[in-house]
Length: 299
Image 1 (spheres, rainbow, N blue to C red):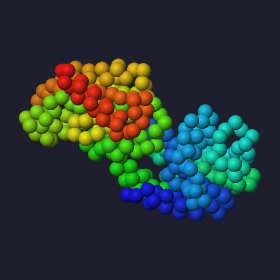
Image 2: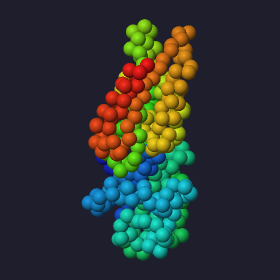
Image 3: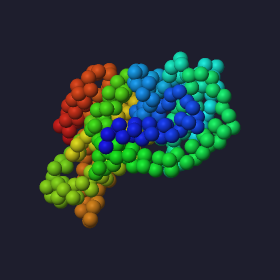
Image 4: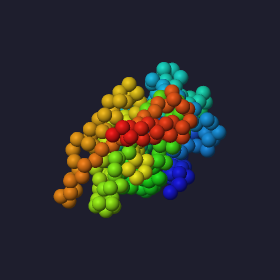
């Protein structure tokens, strides 16, 4: 599933919407706690702009209309954005409407409707916006499926965690953030597969993934990098040693029991700080990996 199918979906939806609201431009911004805001579809006329720079400005801004819509979960109309102390992505926008896009009562993003001349919102416009927001999940009955299929490339199907594709793209989008990369590897996991078989081994991996996820903050991210390797991304640099200790205790303190089989495991961890120790993604990963193996050798 390619991203252009999602773009095509919104392009068709906005073609149907334009006769009602008569806008000049539009964009859809998705928000993720790890990656921050990102454009998933927009007017063709906007594609010439530096979208990554705009995403960073939205992410770093203390006050944005986008953020207001996310928090209030209701559409918002601003007759003149320049009268407000907010940042807008372009001097051409004279009036703006933001509509929360919701599935199952959760907001995943915001539809930005832009006007290059002052726009006066009519009663008819308000009725349409109320209907659009309320019925978006009906209008977009196939969008949730499209989106989930697109995101599958970032998901490890055994554990439900993010996979290595996610972490590579994460660093492409967040190369200015200071972050700790904690590389973790189970100790003697091969013996589990050899003794009990890969089916039990897979169940062990799922339990380990769940235990690590449970001791992390919601702002941290855990990635299954491959096999029995996990990577934790955290901006909580000051407490990285504490986080590593909690990960080790979560795995070592309690035996894993599957089908009456009691399995004892430990885990080794090593970390590196980006960009303090390197600005190269692969180099920083290699450094964390080396420190993990050093930790393993000390056991």
